[in-house]
Length: 353
Image 1 (tube, rainbow, N blue to C red):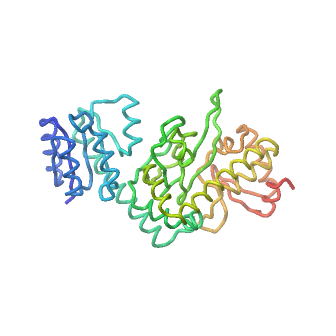
Image 2 (cartoon, one colour):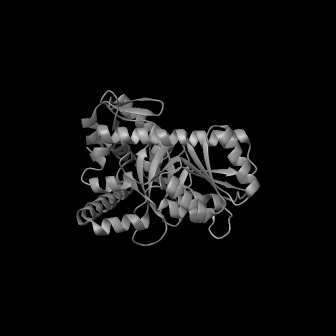
Image 3 (spheres, one colour):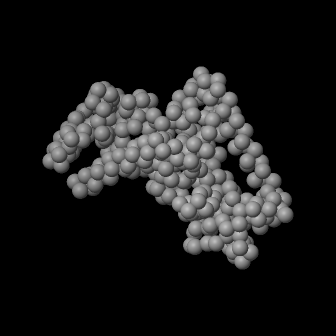
């Protein structure tokens, strides 16, 4: 029987919610304040936590902060139940690692559907992650080669599901966390003063992101958005830095990772400044192509708009170049999918030959 912890200072709401969940065959534990809720979460390790935000002494944000720093409780799905619906309040909760919100008053069916959905997704994530570790998926082992300690460190962290087009953080948000992609893909982008977007990178399973502002104790320099339904591991910045500082070999690998990241961005800036669009498109296809089931290198799920933002061109120019590549036998495309047919010649095109 699944255990659910309800942390709510309003006795009427607490008791009514508990009764609904008991009728749905959940084992229910209740706490009337944040401090009691933290202790019950640590001692009972529930499968899901429902928590009010506005509570005396220790509010819901404080509860989530404490539980997110505890290795045994950080992975428990956490849903806020609140009457607050201001955008700033939602952002604050999501930045702390909340999985969802329920707004008072909520319907019985909405409550049960939200809980069932979050529990099922959490189970699916754990199964996929366990399978990835056992099978040593190529995209994870290749991307993260040489940073096994960091991988192990990230695997025990709180996991968050982000739906397609959902923001994980945005430019100018305070940098509280480092993120690690477990499933799906995440794009990071910057917006200029005219509102034009430029995709700075796309991250796949096995990639860390959001680590560039770590040392400045400042703000994120870009916006992170899920390209598809994805799962990320959330690592508090302070924990990440302490871990790196205490592990010399890991620190070296992390510095290498930072250096490669900076080098890659410098190369892209040079391309944007001097390389023709045709070369940039070829480079982007090669960079973001992954092996499909038939061992062909292909790009799937990246829209033409996003690809245009990556290469710094208009959508019309991108489509024209892709049409030329198809005519030359370099690629074939079907909707958003692009399959590389002639990798050797595409590399020559990317190099400017």
